[in-house]
Length: 205
Image 1: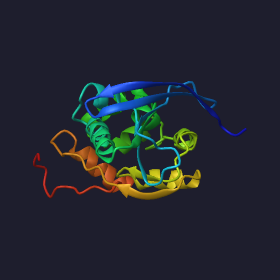
Image 2: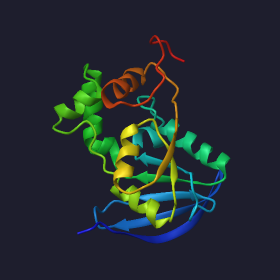
Image 3: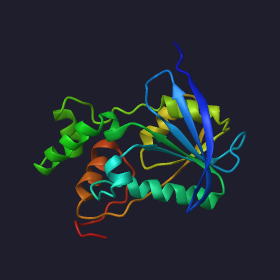
């Protein structure tokens, strides 16, 4: 059966980056609360800035320096605000799809010497278990003609294209490197093909 979703409610959310409209979706795939944070008029528009952001409680909420998630969330909202229109799709796929408990267990394994990919595999998971079919359905529901995806991850572009989304380009979202996230980001570049401009040494920038 083809997956479906329903846009149940939309409400205005004022932010430091201006007013957005939050769209709350239900879906036939899971029981999670995926949402779209929309600025401006995006229906029937081309080259709309879109960020598919997977939930990261530690980074988005607590400001953890172990990853670049919270920083990317903020940067994406700023880019969308500057463009005057765009969408941040917030997907409830914590820990690249393995959930908060397993992600925290993976953190402990990383502190013992594993990298982020090996830690996930050690816990019986894939390096990345995220699925972007709901994001594609949200883009279609919002009637966006084509997007420019805010990402460093080329897999996201390929997956969306396979799902029928017209991706007109990529907007890089380079994080700041620090002593706590450098090894993590190096692993994403080396093992997950993320497009990052890595520093030459381990010094904090």
